[in-house]
Image 1: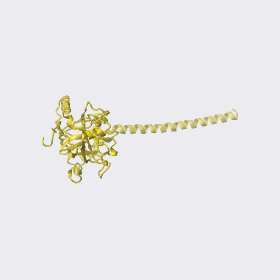
Image 2: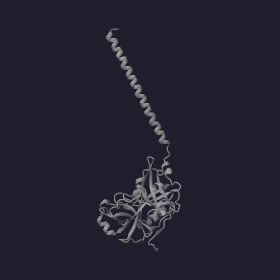
Image 3: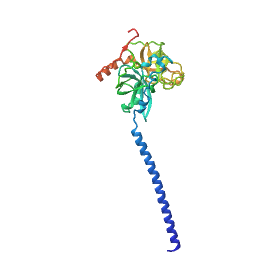
Image 4: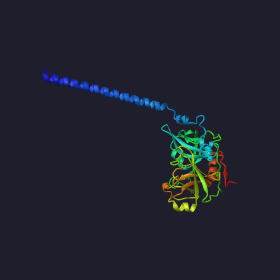
Length: 308
């Protein structure tokens, strides 16, 4: 064999060896990567999707936090409050505030129920029994009943009922009375709204707080809002510094009754527009219709006035 042919053959063999070695190294690297992905996938599949809530349930000595015990700011309505939560990507997300209205039911805004409607019910939880929603006891959800006339565009009929599987029975899980169909909303009177988080103040972001508001005349609310204000709504206003901080779906209290549900607001940072709430007195008949549909008593108590 001529010298040049032997040289070319040697070079060809050399490059073949390099190519084979490179392929082996790349294949091994891919194999290691594949094994890593498989192991991580197996680990995630083995995780308990309920672990976050199990891990965050009340520990001994932390069952009752400061708001009810008197060590912090007093919010007596805390025992009526619960939180609508969602387990997503193995994390607990706060969706909205809710109000306990009977042994197995809470009340919230329809738009809150819209936010969880695409998820399996076993991913939706109601957290109660604590002044911090993360420390609450998780209740599994059995049924979600959003008002059929709710409109995302107009935000009318913004109300939703949620039934839990295990009843509320602790002294910090107490049903509240709702404003009945004859309840009179009087302009310029004060009310209290509750939420789970605030941009302002000294409380942590997941702790319950309250804000005083003043009911706004219906005609005034209709005149200032660009969206149509109808008979299913009432309006109230607070100072601009806290007007953006309430949680959706939470209650509006007046005369020891829940008279509204936090619904929506327009350009709240400006402080020009009052916040809009669902007018609960409008929905006494609807709740009765839900009872007929469900063929069971929800057990809600209504009052038209404090002395009724």
